[in-house]
Amino acid sequence: MSPITDFAFPGESVQKNDGLDWLTPARLQTIRTAYLTGRDPSDPVASPVHARLAGLPRLYIQMGTHELLLSDIGKFVDRARWAGIPVQADLWEGMFHGWQVFADDLPEAQDAIGHIGSFAQDMLAR
Image (cartoon, rainbow, N blue to C red; front, top):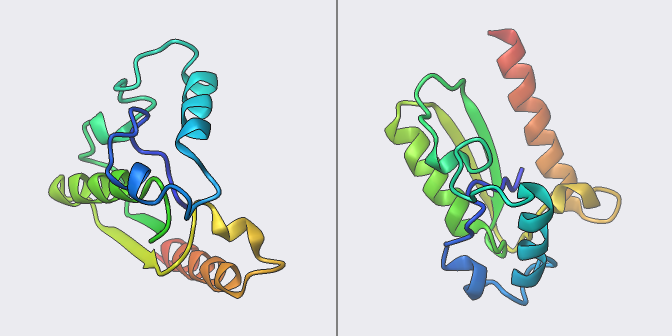
């Protein structure tokens, strides 16, 4: 859900959606510094958009139109599909990074969690 797929944060939505998301470009930099502890942001272990994606299982990704990471997530989805990975990517209008954690207050979050459950049930039934 709203995955970080490239710790370089090169996507245009980082600037375009600034002010629409609770995340800010400055917070992204803080997250990168804390998570990578000096490692290269293009390391495929941290930034899967740079990894060889062939062989991954079916993926389910939720992203919101107001996310700073929207462009980066979209690039990852495209690369995964190009590598032959089945990807179900749902774009949620007006949603921000990690909106699913606000299920107590946000009906869209409850709906998103329901979609996650349906995906998981489908995967387990295979």
